[in-house]
Length: 183
Image 1 (cartoon, rainbow, N blue to C red):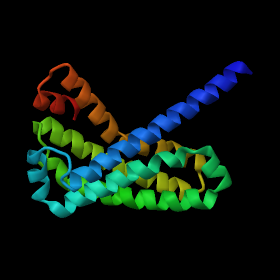
Image 2: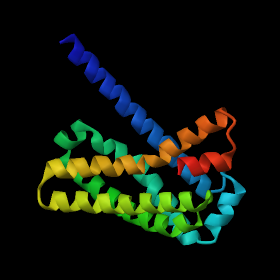
Image 3: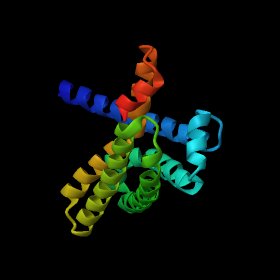
């Protein structure tokens, strides 16, 4: 019984960490869009396709802020309608963010590797959202859950990208080299 209690506490702590990290990067995304943070070179590339940049940043940022809550068992069991409505909004945001991402990917810094990496990430992000949606329409909840876990893992790539870049910076690796490796 003691191990089950510790496992449950660990799961709660990991869930809280996931939500906090997601919300932190979402705020960073909005700060980037408002020019509060971010490299001027990135801003310039994003300005070339301002609409798609906004779609990517706002769609992806809101997905990060919203998505983690969808994994709450309490939300799914006690507030199923809220879970469904949040899920619909989340999938619409993936569509918006993913379409913006597809346009931005060919403009990514870091060379061909980064362009292909971000382009594939955008395509798989959209594909996994579609699969999750189709599964829930079929009432195949197990597949829906699996596809949504995959999808949010891809959404969470925005968080891990920044963690890895921070680790590379701490190791004094040049940003361009780190960015290409992470992408």
